[in-house]
Length: 383
Image (cartoon, rainbow, N blue to C red):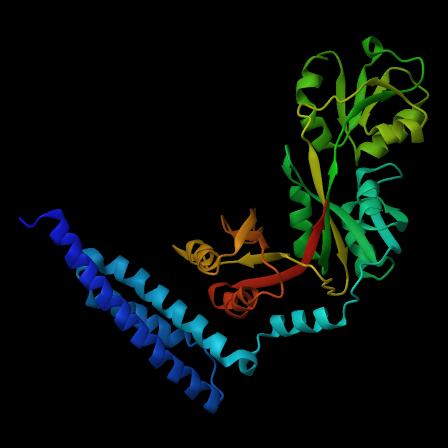
């Protein structure tokens, strides 16, 4: 029986041969790219790739067939990426072409003032986010998230501000479902610190409160506090500012709202309990959306909405591409596709400067892995 050191030496020698052949394969692939350039052929040839993967599995011993298939898929992916890089603008991906055009036409500075649509009423956290995006926003309020999307789509507002996720309660699922129905682009994101306070009309006491109103996420974020009020009924409403306004207009001292301190000043309410949330490190992330594709300088994040073939390994192949290009994955969210049983649509937030060659390599090749790939915008996040 050979010693471990001898076996490792054999593996090293085999690896050396493998990488020598890999380099030789890459050089031949360059000649293939030159041929395709000359004859106007596309890089991706799905029939050829399926045949190569099947042949690799058939040529390997039965117990190694799956590994051979994965190896061939990786080789084909590397070859395809290399050919895309060599062909450059000869085979420009349509989405990448739109991205380049948007980068060239978008102003260098993010606007200081604009017509902005938010959901709810004055005092909502969306308003606070809008005031972080713009120095002088002209804010109009819509009754629902869907209405914000429609207002932007119809050109009645230049931008919309919508919540995406909370650091403790997670994603706003309704938002991801609405994204499928509407046409828009994310142009910037930000985070707003969330501090929920129990607000009531003057003269109210916490012992006398019988009904509390707030948004469902705020209610979830204050679950521990609310569990200490067993005789109180909790009601869900559109958002925290709407809850505060409803309490202010109720004429009652036995109702309260979980809302922001700014709503206390705005609607002349008392703060019965400050910082009622379960965790102090509580932030909500908001997106600023527009109807037109705009990519402002400094954009280093991108959002994608993807449907993958319902086959083993498809998500792995996509994640492997991010890894191979050294692109950081910030968020991965899945939502069911209503018309397909137990199939899902994926939402990705990635971190990669839009001007980086890795970004171009990703966008020019990702379509071959997906049934659908929708580009939702590239942007910077302001803190």
